Length: 126
Image 1 (cartoon, one colour):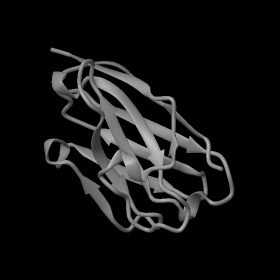
Image 2 (cartoon, helix red, strand yellow):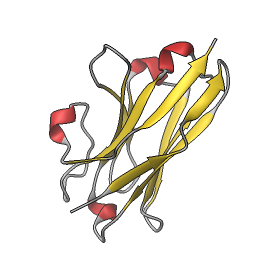
Image 3 (cartoon, helix red, strand yellow):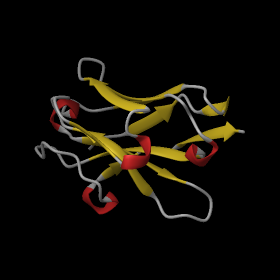
């Protein structure tokens, strides 16, 4: 069982930066591929990016490539989402998610994740 807790959300002006953290419980964190998703009001949850369990592979949706960076520190059981050049359309609740232990790669489908955090609000003002 993995429990996830996101933090770091808030209100930021367009062009600004935020770093989200996702702290995980459990001793198997290093064997879980992780993903970040977001959900804006009235929209479906969408994949933002993901990272393999080693951190050696990262993936991003096109709209955030070059602006967002995912990293992880397995010694701290934490995954990060560094967001720069934020835009009003990045406004959403951001969730981190973990795949079942032993699956190396993340997935862009929310159905492939077994554990979810409660989410953290990111609001980008214009």
